[in-house]
Each structure stands twice: as C-alpha cells, then as structure tokens.
Figure (cartoon, helix red, strand yellow):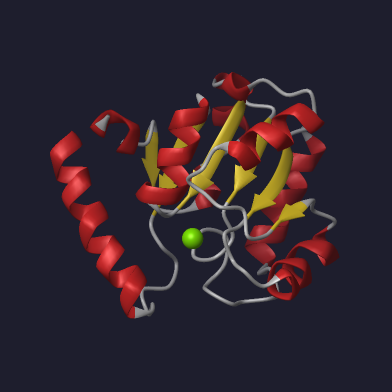
Length: 163
Ligand SMILES: [Mg+2]
C-alpha cells in the first residue's frame, strides 16, 4: 500500500525528463499535472524553456496531455489551449478513472505512459494505481495555501516511510 506512494523516479524539474530518458523507458505519452509541476500555481504563460521542452517532445512523437485537479476550466484552458495541448481539469486525481478514460481514448497502454506531477498523494498515487510510470518533481512555487502545505507535510512523512 505504502509503495503506491513512491514515485518510480524523482527529479528537480520536468526538464530533466529528456527525450533520451523517455525513449529508454519506452514512454510514448505523458500525463502531466499543471500547477507547480510545469508552471507556478496560476501562471498562464509557458516560459521559453517549457515551450522548447514541449516542442522537443512533439518532434519525437511523445504526446503530452494536461491532467489537472484545478477546478477552473478557464485556468487550465488558458494555459493548455495556446500550446495546442489536450487538457482535463477537475480530474479527480488520485482516482485513476480519468487516466483510464484518457488511455482508452488514445488506445494507449499504461506501461508506455508516464504520470508527471509534484504531489505524492494525488499525481503519483493515482499513477501507480493505474500501472503507469511515475515521476515526481519538486514544486515550482513554495508559496502555497495552508491546505496544500499541510498535505506536503503528510507527503514528506510518506516519503520517509517508503524509503
Ligand atoms: Mg501540482
């Protein structure tokens, strides 16, 4: 049970997920969290470095889909649409139902799919339950609301437990 809270790999930043690493792992699709994984909480515009990373993925036929628990469609859409990315908001992570739906839609195997996120109890736990490859990154912006900060404490504890 606790093992479900352990990411397969941990990086500081999403950009450490290079095409070479993804190919070695046999990954052809990425489900990515948005807030604090790709950009700071609420940031609309993708920085140059992110655009470059997305372009490289696309040139290598690795599809990336935004899967966010953010309740605001506007927020997720304003980020994803200019980049031409398929997106899901109010995704209900860690419930793997949304993952199942997207995998079926794209006829995609979970083993060839990577879940990228900054939260153990939502992104990683759900991804592991679905049998996807999971990658945890450090949150981009530490300036977060109390509820999330509390969960970070829980996640810190879980991390020690599963070491
Ligand atoms: Mg996040």
